[in-house]
Image 1: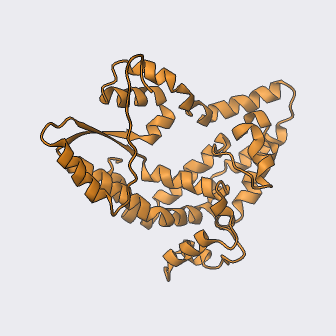
Image 2: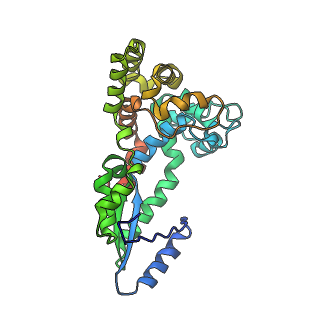
Length: 299
């Protein structure tokens, strides 16, 4: 991953909350007083992580999300404990022995499901915020924070900045070499809309799909039980393969559970915004998640 006659050597180190203080001290000792050590710290907005994780898990994109009995569902119920919030009350009614984590998220209204996703991911995000805070305080190295949200929305500029920070002189050439990793275009809502419009021009009857998209895009969807079955799956079934994530392969393979597509449909973008707003309105977000975002520089 370098321009001609330049090489960028990368070292990957497994880090846990327990090992991080020791590793940070080792970095400090090796850096000495030269301050030539450069660290790229990859982060993502905790709010984006929760929203992405919620839709990813609801879709059953990993085998663990679809397991029955469900250790993930059981763990979430344990985290709820005797919490009297509506989300936890509803979750505790679902039997982990006969339902998967995805089943639970598909059955519960998104306004509740996203809070439970946030609760399940909270410890992980706390660890990431702690790492970010520690790196900001240190003085033995140069630190560049690489935001994964920027990588997924403005790939070229973000990667050029990171490579330039590392001292790669021809960063633009390097970016061209790794352009295949750019997912920003495929995540665009306008790309999905254009694809559906093209299918319509080419003679495909998308009238039913258009009606379903209008229904899916209604703000009240966040309050609906069984929202995934009633709103999302019909859209998936009517979406032309050319406009679906992974060319529609995810729909055919889902029934056999051989694999899942790791790209979510842009048709869900309006719902994501409603779910995001619903989460931000909760006490859990204001007291627990937002402080972590502030630590990591997301205001």
